[in-house]
Image 1 (tube, helix red, strand yellow):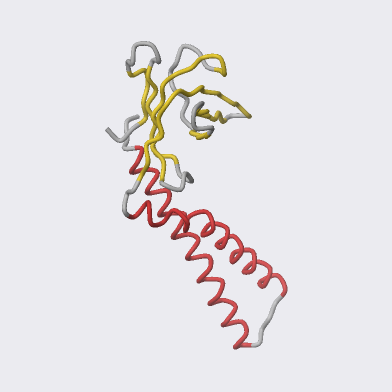
Image 2 (tube, rainbow, N blue to C red; image 1 turned 90 degrees about the vertical axis):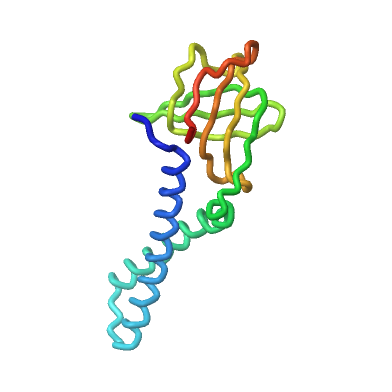
Length: 155
């Protein structure tokens, strides 16, 4: 399955941002209508308060990166890295540990590499937003030959 990973992440970002805005605005409108009608019901209030808090949580996750996603202002973090795979249930996560920069980046895709783990170094390029909250793409190179081994990019 080939798709533009950066475009997909940006779509997910805008979807989450819109969902957060809808939850917050919808909850506020509901509370105003409920107050004006003076029909305050316990379960309806709990549901709308939960929706409001969920919207705030989603906005808290997306708003700090809004400027970088709109302007497509991304950083490429590169250097030696190790790759760790963690599995839980049906899902597996990939973690890039950048050795010189002491940073970690997570992805859901598992690259097709011969070996994983802390003892196997690679050269990696990871594209992230400037605030490092959203990972976009990655490229993995052989550290000795410089040959591209695997990538999930928009190219």
